[in-house]
View 1: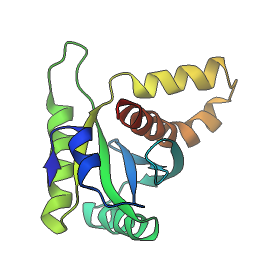
View 2: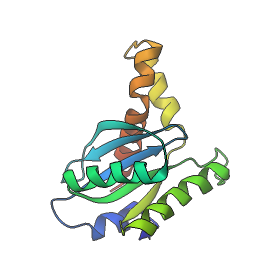
View 3: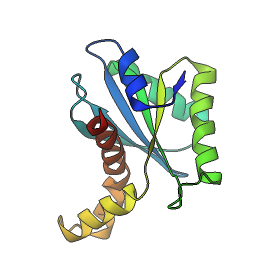
View 4: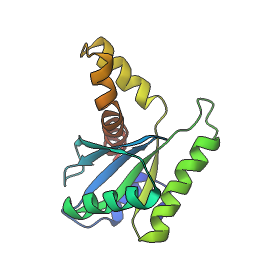
Length: 152
């Protein structure tokens, strides 16, 4: 089921489960997981996208292995607050997940998450471009999930 708010999602997940944050892009899916107290997000992986069925299998394995109770998917809302084609694509991604298996999902406004992470990695962490490309997606997922957790 898709929930309107992160608070609604948090209310229905069972104790001792976690949330999985997703930064869904056209080529990769960045992943982050919360602790069971829903306080801290941690980057875990980046999935190279292929067919949806393979991406879904990878997600299910992570969901089962890490005791995930719900998904927080970053929604790329435009700076003016409107939802364009990218949002429609992400909403469809969530709908495709639910078509295959019932999960609790909430979307989270991810405006500027990737650019905030890129800026941090460039300015503060002083990483090379190659190393930034290896970690940016999972760190963007962490940024998205941590924002959702902080709102609780």
